[in-house]
Structure formats: C-alpha cells, structure tokens
Figure 1: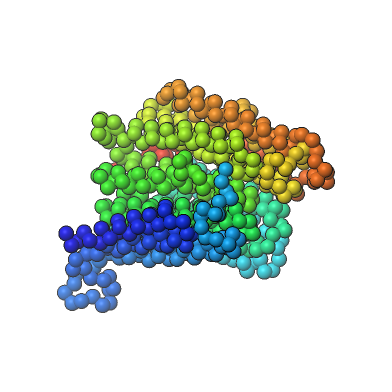
Figure 2: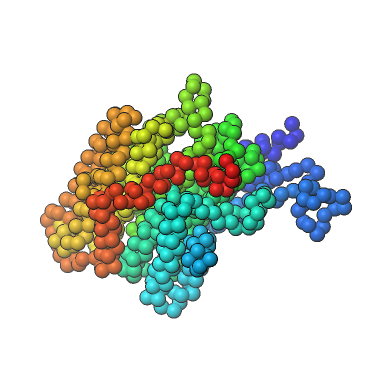
Length: 119
Length: 521
C-alpha cells in the first residue's frame, strides 16, 4: 500500500490543478492550477525513477561493492524531470507576463469580464 | 565519401541547428541594420531549405534515414536521441520550409513599421526550428520538448500586437490550452517509459502490448494532439489565435498546427501500428473504433467550421473558422483510411488526406495573406467597414479569388485535387459522409462569395479613395502561393507520385520505420 502513496498524490494534484483551471475565475489562480498539474506530472516522473537499493550513477563515487553498471540507476526520469521543470519555468513566466499585460489593459483579472473574443 | 554524402548524413541535425543558431544570432544582426536583418533571416532559411532539399532527395530514393545524437552503438540502452526521417517526415518538413519562406518574404513589407522586430524574427525562427524538430524526431520525449518550444514561440507571436487586448486574450487562451495539453503528453510519455523502459518511437512500437495503460495513453495522445491540430470540440483556441496573430506569422503557426496533425498520424500509424488490428470488446477491431471516432469528430468539425464561418464579421476570424473545416477534411480522410485499413480505397483516402495537408496550408495561408494585405492598406478587420477595394487592389483581388476557389474545391485549383480524392474514397466507406463533405464545401463557397462582395466589390467608400496596392514583397509572397496552388491543381499527379505516395506508404509500412532502428524484424 505504502508504495502507492506517491501515485495517489500525483492523481490528486492533477485533479486539483484541473479543478482550478476549469472552475476558478481568477487568471492568477488558473496559472497556479497549471503549475500544480506540472508539479504532479514531475512527481510522477520522479516516482518512476525510484529503484529500491539503487545507487546514484556517479561513476567516481560508487559505494564499495556496487557492480558497474548493473547496480546503478539509469537517470533518464530525472533528466526528463529537469527538462520539464526548465520548460515549466518558461511557460509560467510567459503566462504571468500575459496576465500582467491583461491586467494593465482591462483592469481586472476576472475571466468573465475579459471576454471580447466571443461570437 | 564525397562532400554531398557527408552533408546528407549531417542534414537532420543541421536542419534543426541552423535556424536555432540563426534565431539567437538575430538580435545581434538586428543591431547593425534592418535590411541586413531581413536578408539574414532569408539566408538562414535558404541554407535550411538546401539541407531539407538534399535530405528529401536522399530519403525519397533510399528510404528512412537515422541520425544519432549520443552513443552510436544501438545496443547501449537509452543514452541517445534518435532522429528518424522517413518520407512522411520529409514531406512535412518540405511544407514547413515553403510556408516559412513565404512568411518571411511577406514579413519584409508587412512588419516594416513595427517595433521589436529583432524579437519577432527570433521567435519566427524558433517556431520554425520547433516545427522541424517535431517532424524529424524519432524520440517521443524529444517530440514533447519541441511541442513545448512551439507552444511558447507561437504564444509569444500571437501576442505580438500586445497593445490589442484581444491578442492578449487569444494568446492566454492558447497557452493555457497548450500547456495543459503538453503536460498530459508528458504524463502519457511517463506511462510509456514506466511500462517499456524506452522512449524511442520505433522501439516502443516494437514492444507495445496494448495493455489497459496503453489505451489511456492512446486516448491522451490523440486528444491532446487533436486539440493542437484544431479538431472540434477542442477547436476554440484556433480561430482566436489565427485571427489575432499578425497575418505574416499565421502561415508558420499553420505549419506548427500541421506538425501536431503529423503527430496524430505518427501515433496511430507507427506507435500503435502493430496493434491496430487488435480486436477489442464486442469484436470491434481497434482501427475501426479509432477510425470512426475520428470520422465523427471530423464531420462535426466540418459542419461547425462552416456554420461558424458564415456568421463571422471579422475577416481573419472567419478564415480561422474555415481552417477548422479544412482540418476536418484531413481528419475525415485519415479516419476513413484507418477505419478501412487494408482496402485499396483506404490508401486513396490516406493519400487524399496527406495531399490535403499541403493544400490546406497553401489555401488557408493564401487567404490569410490576402486578409493581411487588406488589413495593411485599410487598418480595418471587420467586413462591415471595408468595401470596393477591388478598384485599387487588383492583384490582391485576383489572389483572393484564387484562394477562395481553392478552399472551396473548385476544379482547376489544388483544393479540388485533394478533396476529390477524399470524396471518392470516403464515398466507398459510407456515401453519407461524402455528401456532407461536398455540401459543406459548397457552403464554404457561399461564405467566401459573401466576403468577396463585402470586401472587394460594392460601392467605393470615401475613406478608401486613396488606398494603394499592397507592397511588392507581399504581392510576391501571395503570387508564389497562388502559383503553387494553380500548379498543384493542374498537375496533381506530379505531386502525388513524387511526394504523397511515398509518404502514405511510409505511414502504412510501419515495419520499415521500426526496422530501421531495431533491426532484423
């Protein structure tokens, strides 16, 4: 049971984020929702990368008795997570700057009042 | 080994590297001179185009080509990124190349009076890079990375006219939709990695077992990529962002959208190629189920697109809705191709869909260029505010007529060639689908005849007494697209034989795609 807890957390985070995006009216809260989904997905990738009894793949500091390369963990999920975090920062910054400009233009962050593109 | 062989071997990497490097050199070059900046942009594209050209000639002659970033020995797992280029990828790359080239020529005059053009050109080149990346990569995580780059670059370009509130709204809508979509793609990639310990599309396709998780992954990937391609009911971002982006970059954004469509093809035909004929519950094979779901959504897209286009008053937004219709035609064709997999008309449907990909990009692109020219000379977006422009803008009017006849599928133009293939093959699957498609095509003609009368015909307004023809570079860009449209319309067989047939065969023959990487199957 205990090993399922990270996956439960992942699903909970994704649903909390989706709830925020779909039902919150404030643009900042929508951005926060997307950020929560992203953290959930990153947590999912990190959870996949965990191997019991695995050793970090740093060749020069292997603990004695570890066989090379079978004892080391392949760091692909961690690499994916790092990439995803970097991309996430870029998207977050872009979204927040858009929100800033929208606030300057409309004077509000309420999505119900920012709807000129609707026909 | 002579120099051309070396260049061909390195070209998959160079096609990505040259525009990427060009993008980051652009701010430096812009500091010198604005003419030099425009020439530099075109030079970068010419160089990329040269590599796309030689790679295309090689791939079409010798089959798929592999490019390995990282460990060359394929037996060592996971420490590399593979680029795999087959006829389908190179067909998409050629479309992107043509669109990018035309957009840059058009931008020369169109964006002349705007500020911040160094950033504009940087973003344009980044968007081109990411589109090429999505089309050439053979690694599914790499696909996600390029998808995100294209999302960021297109969002920034949609919001380029930042003083307009609507552009900001469209950009925010676009980035929310694509950011969530991309995260779900990443989630699906995580699930694939967890099951098969691989990220390479060919390796994954080889070992895919079609478990319960794989069904979820298929749904996630199809929904997200379908959304990014503009399929109803997830189309709402498309008319907004096409309508609000500067018309000079809409062409390139169309290219990025088509790259998502290519992603749908790659997922269905290659990633799930081995399990497509697996029987599901109630003894329905997977291909029939996926095919009919796509056909249903496609028919809804076609109808919704035309119906919404009829009631629009904003010129560019109207074209955006007709773009939704065209996306519907492409999905109708590939849906029919999947549902009837194995029959001769399925191949025809697939060829029609792939040819329509090119035609959609050219026709919708031409209409956006014309709308941009009208906006450039009159500064008006609404159909109600413009009238009688044909008096002063003769060439633009001619190009508009070519564009709308092509979109509506009138015989001497390219739209007819692909739509006819689609009608013919879909008719054999189910006649009703074909009838709906033809009716909507006629409605499309009605939509654009209305636009034609509102914008180009009618009484001359005093405000437009002194409007002049669009500048020369814009006319050149429109002329190039119109010439291509007429050429493909007159000689569709040349294009079908040279490019479309190999692309369709590459999709259907997924064993070759897998075998290039895995070997010996």
